[in-house]
Image (spheres, one colour):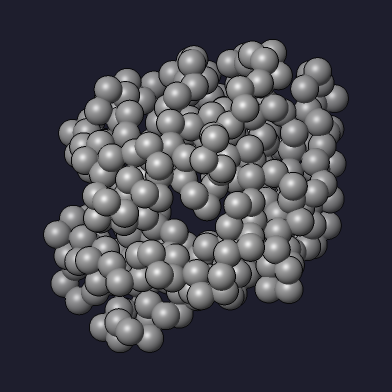
Length: 314
């Protein structure tokens, strides 16, 4: 399907929970998330039904997100249900990696094709400070478990934050010399708790190119511009939602864990999907696609959404 601006929308990011076992400073407050009644969140059956309706509307790729999706009870059932959908070409999942030692193998068997693993620092003390509850060794063990389970083309997502991890850029780039991973630097977005942070925290990814002229461009298509260091088995992705928004090429919609469709991460506009079935559900999804906003306004002001990232799906 195409939206009103002629963009083909074929990618759904489906949040399965707003809960997380971390409390990352840019994502949520130190108190974490107020646990909502079980019935307020999409059930396993609803997740699969919404996925099926989205595929019927032309979606080819689904990414499961959170919060932290691995804390969701019934996650493997959701994966199996979505993987069985005719027409779904790719099922992915984004995780902080800490629970992968026990779940990487089952996720692979349940049909997940690819993993993105969040990793904002390689310093244990910084990792503990940023996540408030996490340990770097757990995340690194999760990456190893993913590889042991047979996941290839791993992507490591690193939010670039001035004054926090900008002195680690070369360390992250070095990972691509030793591993066939894609290390992706993502600009910090002014939303949620970090919306009022100092401007110096919001570094453009061009900072990486300026200081690493050896990076060779591979592709500029899609969300991530991709580069490679000479002779590196891995690649580098640069994602610039603030400095160079990619709204004109955006092909995704989102569904929150409480069942509301968002055409844009940063928009206030949401469309309820719970309680809809069959053609009514597909019609609501099609309407959400057609009415997808043309762009966000992060270059001018903080995000318009009142939700934090964990409430939308990372």
